Amino acid sequence: MRVALDTNRLTDLFQGDADLAGFLGGCQEVWIPYVVLAEMKAGFLGGMRQVQNEALLSSLLSRETVSILYASRETTEQYARLFVQLKRAGTPVPDNDLWIAALSMEHDLALVTRDRHFDKIPQLRRASAV
Image (cartoon, rainbow, N blue to C red):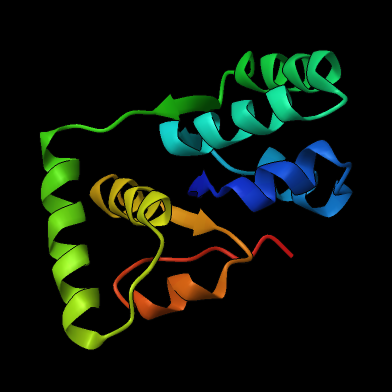
């Protein structure tokens, strides 16, 4: 399975979620969208465990199956289509989460998240880690 991780699930992983770690260990590719990386870094800077969290992130990113996912021109097209779709439906989603969804859809990744507002995007594949 090829997955993208949302911020809340990456946080769960760093807090020791063994079931999630096992699930991710069985994935052929784990992608961390750049937006998730930025949100995590902001949390590290504002928290009390910056050094420990940076070490956890570095260890995760050193794995062969884990990579960072950056936006492309196609991502902006995906984002725009999602934005208009959700606006017309009257079901907006936070901007950062729109970027995460656009990246996941562009690269045909299943998103691992606990956020229910992604349910408003039926074409977005989701993965249930546990």
